[in-house]
Length: 456
Image 1: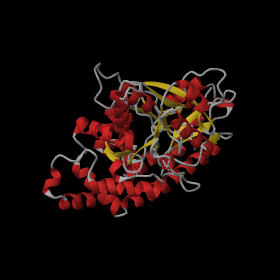
Image 2: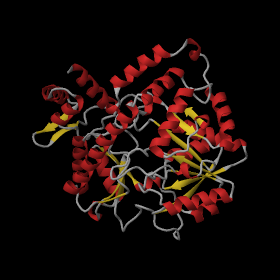
Image 3: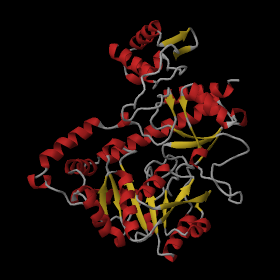
Image 4: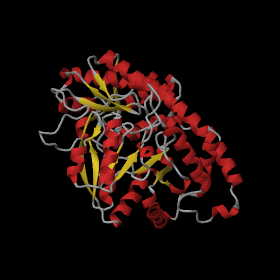
């Protein structure tokens, strides 16, 4: 109880819980933390008596306005803006689903089984047993043409993209096409490696081949199985057209399969890379299935780039940590990774369903677009919830963090076709992440959002 009170005081003092932010009910917070409701109630009462919180019977508990701003200075690493009561911003899995017991057992087995010589500097491609396990996994689950000799173990997709960018830059390629709307990270990673990024528009089938050809790029980064953020899956015809473009210009498609394992209405669409391994580089990781903090991923490089990519990996960090690789190899080989994917798939499907129910119940007339997959949806709220800036400001005051689709859209010519999930007569379109939230938190967050939309 004292620890909870101390953390709440510090969150209010530092501004991570902003004045006026609404706190979850004692029942909800107790359920989320796995403690008794009485403990949370006592903490709320104590901090209300001290002036940190305010409470009115029947209307909830709020952060008070009596506390002065924290002294000026840089916040600790990883801290900054106030922590919202409910955060719908996309991109995060649920770290509570991490299989601690199975992971700890795999750690013990891996450490006991590693020969002494394996603890020296590793092969920059990765441990052979892990590359073989990943190749078999990707072939079986994602339809990737994965030769272990072309698999490079990386610190997540970010490093895979960086390795490719450095290799392409060395070859004289200076422009990379990126999806618009698309991930912030793609443009940032390639720009950091000295490459110019050219936003290319989308329609309901995928990246537009005409705009791609006009961009002058010979490399394009795609999320074809579940495009981020629009949520579409590239059509078979568009996949074929993009592969034809790559062959015509001697180009490269870079496939970021960031959540391709999670499809809830049918079997996942196979990876684009399987159609032409010479023209598609494939990147993936365990960030959405296990945890981002593990920094474990892979790159399946085309034959023409594999040697240079491996040399870049060697000079960058002399190879990925050996014990982590041995651990993941054991985890995959024993079937634990498949079990984890099934567990996450069940949980995320339930949370997506909970989000759709809450939107229908509390807001109504909300159009949800995109395939039933992944960790986010596009929700077009009814016109009465707008305009967008006013809704975003009200949601922030209510303690709900949301990101509009417009944040992912660069300026576009008026002649461009409508984007998938794009503007619709003033509707506010939000990219709502749900995987990291329990069904109760999802329902609570949507209620707060609905109240914010109704506030005069």
